[in-house]
Length: 299
Image (cartoon, rainbow, N blue to C red):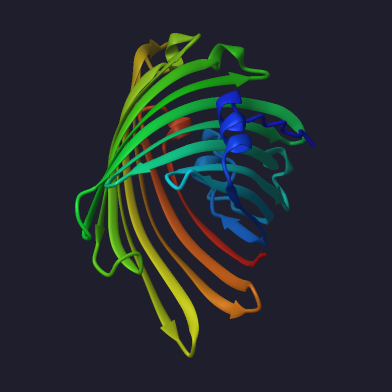
């Protein structure tokens, strides 16, 4: 297992040493099962519709501290582990570390975050990613919140170095609060570009997403439902020899997720998601649906 060592920037550390802080620590552990209708996505398997079930384990460790009233620093470690029953070659383990610094001045919220991620495939190192993301948010009024974020990303593949890439993305996001945070609509539009060492893997993309979230209480317990839809168009920048053209993809997704409190820090989750991948590259032209169910414990 790969272990992350995350270090806060010196300026954050110095500020924490000089100011009174209020620290909070949380642990979230989740376990469940997933069904995917099309785990094997090679062209020969796409039309067969071969699915598989997997055991899923999630771990989240979060430490946050407030200081000087307007400042907040947060550090997270996330682990996601998926083990398939038949397609063991697609077993994955993802480690993610996040450090962020946030400042709120009235209706303006500024933040900068750094992300380190390490993905393993079938027990072997597969991908390392680094990302830095400054953002600015504006609480327009009690009903609207607007946010802009810029991402600078670096990806390095262990066995596919020709896919190593640098990426830049700009996201414009909104929240429309219908009943504060218990009922709201959110959406974003994102433009992104990735430049890979092999130009066949360089692309531009436009992404749009809408989601509706609703909380309600029944018999003293909290229930949450989320409905979302997403569309992405990718235009690759260099022709491929195997199709005699540059690759173009549409990636469409829709899903419904629900969560219910069970009491004593326990909850249960259920997610149904459908993905439709349309591409002029045969191996990337398929659809699938996924069903996830699990238990979560938070301390």
